[in-house]
Image (cartoon, rainbow, N blue to C red):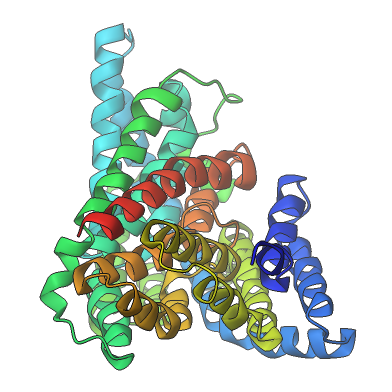
Length: 448
């Protein structure tokens, strides 16, 4: 069993991806090489591997285009002066003389606000990562002023992007818990009600909370210095911006229009275009400048879109190998009657799959067909089964170099080029969330 597990092409491919990324090879290059290694190890020829890879690229095109438009919208917002105004107001509240007490209060109040905003992006105002390139880059000069470790902010943002959908059945949580998790469990023979999901996922959510508290109050509580910051506007668009009340009002209207477009039309592209048109019609941005806005938007958010496209190709190769099912079946056929070992290995397999695919929403359908009968065979209760499958899907969403929940924070925090994706986002979120979530998920699977 151990040999089959350790030599599984999917596992080896994911390990290759992580090693290459840790060695600072570009994530897109790492994805291509890891996909090729996994396909060849599974017995596919090189042409078949690349055919599957290129065939899967289209699955990420919509996401990439959304991010490009979101980047353009963020640039337009920065040029209106809204972001510069926010940053200046925060600087004013810090004051000239920064005492230790004032700094402590300001720092943790700011972190609390970021946590609440991030959580709200999944349910109250379900815009997912769309708020990050608008809100975070203007705050970088403020972070530098108070010597805030951006790794703490990365952990906060990732916590807010993942924990709510794991636990709260509203917004994206309604999709994950009710539609994907409960829907797949029911379709595979386990009759459970959606109302059981929040209770089943409560212990895992506490594990995520423990990771957040450790990151903020222990791991990254010490001051960290960065290069002298630019103004908020220059961080985002590389251009100085004069704050004019009229332009700020136009910026606020554009934000409202963008939010309305996302909530009512469920289209980030239309919302972004509509918001930019508000700037154009108000002559805050001239028609001739829209090309420059789009180009800077690509620079700000285009990278995350390309990574998501490549990740879609990688996921397609992993599916084409047929080794995802064999990885799950290897565990299923080899654990005997040990419930504790079974729960641990089911969670571990989920971690491996999600680390590679980068989407917990895509992992659950892949594992539910095997996990449900296995849990029934071992006498695991329906509530515990919900927890096991739900956590197995969510594990790896934090800490995966190709996950939106990690790429999004990096896109905002690295707007001035001082936040490394792997060492400042991937590794911190992996350590602070996957380890506590694995432990909490195992406890939930054993006692529920």
